[in-house]
Image 1 (cartoon, helix red, strand yellow):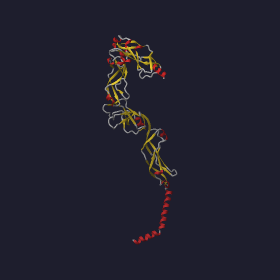
Image 2 (cartoon, rainbow, N blue to C red; image 1 turned 120 degrees about the vertical axis):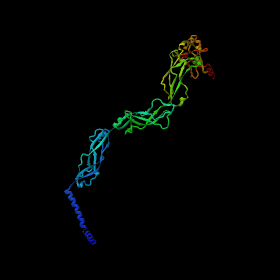
Image 3 (tube, one colour; image 1 turned 90 degrees about the horizontal axis):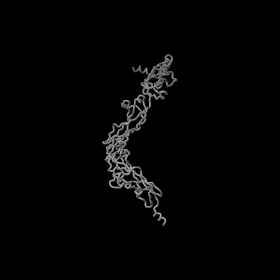
Image 4 (tube, rainbow, N blue to C red; image 1 turned 120 degrees about the horizontal axis):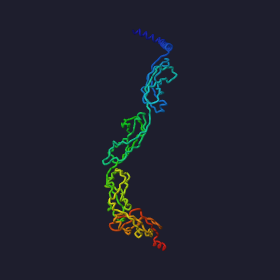
Length: 439
């Protein structure tokens, strides 16, 4: 057996050159036969990647490709063996034909497969390749934004008063047309994690989308022009307080005690809201003052109306814009005119370096009071005062206001009406002139 193997091995080695030549010759013959006898072949190429790009029309119309159900295809190709035998998927390009897409929707479109090297002698014999392509239209629309404070906790004795506002009040949302059109409004949901709110605040908020039926849209694929929302929450402390008014014109200047004047008011209390706890220290609220000098017989008969004005930052919850003061005893009052002579006019607080002379001879005034009292009055009961304190004086004439006082005990009337004035003549004091000359 060994001898046979040795003879075979020796013969193989001796004839190795001949054997190699025979193999090469066989291959050449096989290639020649394949080319000459079987020049064309067909084969399958797998996993050719499919591309899907929007057309210029689609881009102009904001039409976007949402999904494509085919990512790779397999095709049969035909051609010369020497041309196609080494082709792979990378040598082909497959693309969706979207030339017939003119709007949103789902389309079945043809897939075109071509060789990247057009010089290769090859034919793609597979036809009718298709893909299902979903196209959406992207639109932008403006929607309103409303504040939402449902998750906020308001401190005890405090409450939201006035309008809760939000910024911005509207935004633009962008997304698929159907989804964008389903949005009716956005609610800016304010959240505060630091306990109960006890003062007015501007609170950050996050958007929540709602349709026309008031149903929340969960995580819609939309783009908003801003993600920063601020909800302004006006929180106030509310308290109802009794109303007070004051009469000005003291007994010293008018002779009449306002405490003797009976009155009622159209409203006795007012509910107000304070932006802080300062309202806790109030037992009543002063609405205003009524000057006796401005209180006429007509006011007594028909009532005196005062505007209700609160300090800045406070709110009038009751809503009353004014109150009227009524005088139940108005029938007991009357009004008469009197002429006050210059002898009854006194100048006080005159500077020492000026002399002052009253040029006005008399003043006609109106007096309001109890009818049985003013009927017994005369002009001698009325005294006028000119107070020059704090007044800048120069030589010449000057028109100044006067105040009045009625003389007597238990005065039951007062001077009312216009701002009464007198004319003064102001000159340098005589002693000052003499002193300057001596110097």
